[in-house]
Length: 565
Ligand code: NAP
Image (cartoon, rainbow, N blue to C red):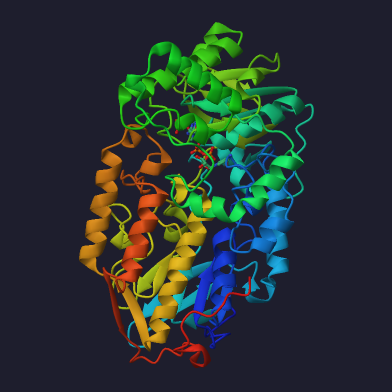
C-alpha cells in the first residue's frame, strides 16, 4: 500500500530515458541491451531478487519444460560458452542461479531497484513522459516505459469460501516460501493438475503421510526423461551455438534441433504412427512429441491419434483402472492446453499414500477449518497446496493502474480482451512497450528467444527514434485492429480455442474469452517484425520530440551502439 506519510510524490530519478517494470529474464535483458545503446535505464522489481518466474515459483519439482541448452540467453557468446547446465531440463534453483549470475556478470544490479511494486503509471501527452508510482508513494518518470511484467506472474487462488478459517498451512505454487516446505508426515491436498501440480505431486507424495490430488480436468503429460547432460553433447552443442540460435528463429516454437514434421497423421498407417509416437515418448519432451505430424494442432482426427496414444500410456502405467481412466484427458485435444512434462507423474498414483479425487463430479465447496468439503465428503488436511494457476498474460498489467492522462485506462481498452499491435504496443498508449505481450508468440515459444527478439525490436526502435530526433511512437488503431484480427484468425484455424485454457482466459471467472497468444509461430512473427522495422515501422506513428523528452542527448544521432556483451 502507498505510504500515507509521503505527502507529495517526488521524482527520485529525473534523468532516465527508459523505465522497465520487472526484473525477470525480460527486464534484465532490456536493461543490458538498452544500456549498451547508451540509454539511461532503471528497472523496478516487486521481488527481493531477480529472476521473475524463477524467483517466485519455488515449489518442489519446479523445472523448465524447454531444454536448458536452449532456455538460456543468446546475447552473449561468452555467457553461453561459460555457463554449465548440469541437466537436460534445468530445475528452478539452477535457473535462478543463472539469472543471478547474469545480473552480476553484466553489472545489472546497480540499475535494478528491488522490493518495489509499481501500482500506477500515467502518460502525460504534453510532457511526453510516463510517470510511475511505487507502492511506497514515490514517483519516477521517463519518456519510455517497458512492461517486462511476465505472463504468469499473478498467482490465482480460487475464491473458495472458508479459506480464512483454515487452521492448517496453505501455499500457492507460484508464491512459494523461500525456506521451502517439509511435508514429511503430513496429510496434504494438492488442488489442480496443471504443469505446476504435475511437477510437484511426485515429490510431495514422497514426503507426505498421505496426498489427495483434486483433479477437475485431466491433463496430458509426456515424460521428461531428465538426466545429467553428457559432456560430449554439451561440447558439440556449444560449438554449434551460433548456428543453433539463428536456426531457432526459423522454427515455430523458437527451438532448433527438432526436425519439423513432414507429413500429416492422416497419411501415416496406424503402425507407423504408433511407432513414431513411441519413439517420441522414449525421447521425452513436449516439442518432439507435438512435432510428430504436421496436422496435430489443426485436425481433430489427427490429434485424436496422439491423444489416444497418451491415454493408452496412462492406462498402461496406472494400475488401478478407475484411477487410470480418471487421469485420461478426454475433453480437449492434446497440446491445446500447455502439454505438461513430468518425472513420474502417472506412476505416483500407484503409491498407497496417494488418492485421486474427481473434483469435476464432486466439486470443492468450501475450505473448512480442518480441511475441505466437496459435494461428496469432508477431508482433513494439515496443508493445502493450490496449484491453481495464474491470471495469465494480462493479470500483471491489470494490477497496475495504467492510463493516459485525461484519456482511457488499459483496463478499459482491454475490457473485451487484450488488443495489441504485435503484442508489443497498444493503440492510444504511446511510448509504452510490452515484452511478450498478448498477441505475440511469447508463451507459445521458448520464452527466452521471444524475450530477446522483442527486446531487440524495441531497442532498435528506440535507437531509430533517437537517431532521427523523434520522441514519440504509438501503434495506429488500424494496425492494432488488423493484428488482433489476424491473431484470432490464425488461432481459429487451429484446435487451440477448443480448450478451456488460460490461453483463452478461461481459468478466470468473468475474464473475456479471447485466444491471447499468436500461434503463427516465431518464424513468421519475426519475419513480420523485421519487415515492419525495415519499412520504417509500418503501423506505428512516429512523431517529433517537440516535448523535448530529454533522451540522453550524448547518444542522439549515433545510431545503434555496440553492445558490451
Ligand atoms: P494451470 O495450468 O492453469 O493449472 C491450474 C490447475 O488448477 C488446473 O488443473 C485447474 O483445473 C485447477 N483449478 C483451478 N481452479 C480450480 C478449482 N476451483 N477447483 C479445482 N481445480 C481448480 O496452472 P499451472 O499448473 O501453474 O501452470 C500454468 C502455466 O505455467 C503452464 O501452463 C506453463 O505454461 C507454466 N508452467 C511451466 C512449467 C514448466 O516449464 N515446466 C511448470 C509450471 C508451470 P481446470 O483445468 O479444470 O481449470
